[in-house]
Image 1 (spheres, rainbow, N blue to C red):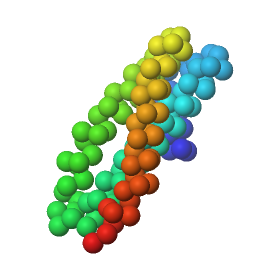
Image 2 (image 1 turned 90 degrees about the vertical axis):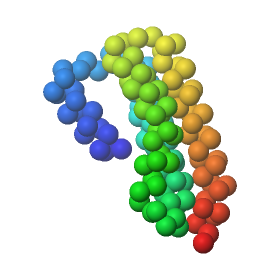
Image 3 (image 1 turned 90 degrees about the horizontal axis):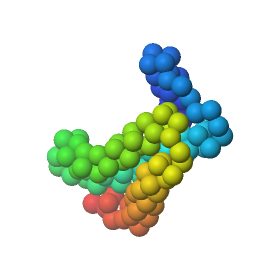
Length: 120
C-alpha cells in the first residue's frame, strides 16, 4: 500500500490533482485503492499458482491474466476519476460494488481452488 500512496503523491505533484475535500471522498478513495489492490493480488496469486506447474510457465501468465484484469482497471480508473472530479458518492457506488464483487469471487475461488492449482 505504501507504493500506491507514493504513486498517488507523484501523480498529484506532476498532474496538479486536487484531492477530495470531504471525508466521504477520502473513504471512497481508500476503498477504491484497497479493492483494486486486493483484486489484483487475488487474481495474480491464483493464476500464478496455475502457471507454475505448466510447461509454458511465464509465457502463459499474461494470456490468462489480461482478460481478467481489464474490468478491474476499468472500474478502478473510472471510480478514481470520479473521486478526483468531486462527483457524488452515488456515481462511485456502482464501481465500488463491482470491485467488491470481483474481490469476493476471486478470493473465494482462490481459497477453494488453490490446493488443486499447486498439485502436480
